[in-house]
Amino acid sequence: MRSTNVEFVTELMEFSAHGALIQAFVMQALEQYAMRVAAMDPQALDTPMVSGHAWHGCAVEVRAKLAERFGREEHDRPAASSTKGR
Image (cartoon, rainbow, N blue to C red; front, side, top):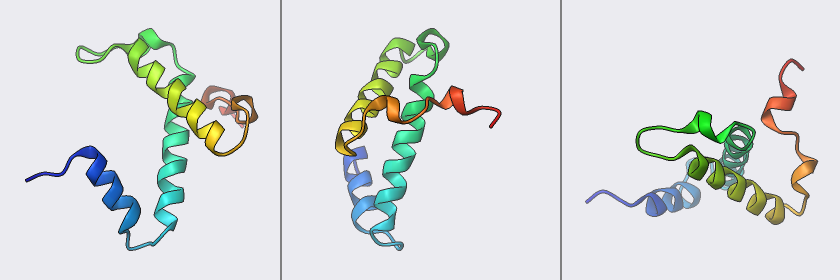
């Protein structure tokens, strides 16, 4: 039987060949993707299966929760679109 997404992520975070480093990698990947999506126009994210507003809302929620977890304000990290060309 195939594992759920939660089971998969838990296994990845707990049993990596790279030890606990994988946790930092996964958290950074979450933060970077959430920042990129949150910086986009929600309508540009629309697909036949998912509302762009809902997808954008997920990104904003993840960004806020990660900022709280890491003890920083959301404005402490630049939005993905503001770092282009640097």
